[in-house]
Length: 116
Image (cartoon, rainbow, N blue to C red):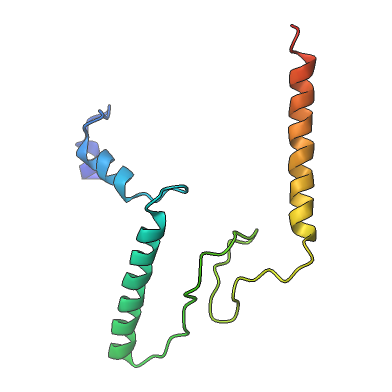
């Protein structure tokens, strides 16, 4: 709290703390994202190995396959699920239809006000 109160009110472009927070943040679409995720996974696995060797607690194995497609629950694959969608595609079709309907309404509105 004291550290925050001593910071200037306006942040400039050369603020080192702001720059560091931007560098640490992982963004979707970053070409180096896969590298950083792999690096984090290796770091996490090393921590688990160290932790399990000191406490003698066995951990469940982590999923090491390719990055899965995102699901609506945000569940990462793991010990009991291999990230393969075995459904019939209904949910995917439903989301596409809802998206199309929303974009059609937006286009419809734009067409109606285009001549104004």
